[in-house]
Image (tube, rainbow, N blue to C red; front, side):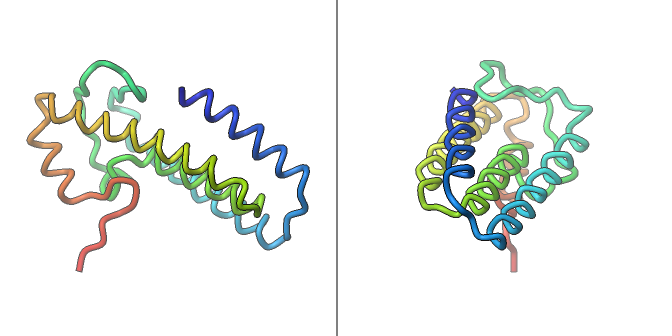
Length: 145
């Protein structure tokens, strides 16, 4: 399902990118936001390369918990990096026609992340994960006073 939505959204964004004129500041800002998403993606890869992470919608419960790198602040840095990438592209395209696509992608990634969190609660890591969950943000770092 994620792959289908990503392909459809990619074609829609490419069409909008080519069919509409975007202001240069929006294109540059969108590109910088996309670079930030890419940096987060690579940081998540480096932090989790030793762990055996499950794919989205995998039926098996997790057997490892990563809490270093971006995982120190976010529970789902891969999904966050994807969302940051799509938001950057939406900024670059500079049209409200991208918003429905962003909403669908946000809903799918949220659904996948919540499913992963349910699996943690059914695994031997449940207690550890609950403690981790209290101190980290879902897609955005938790702000503390």
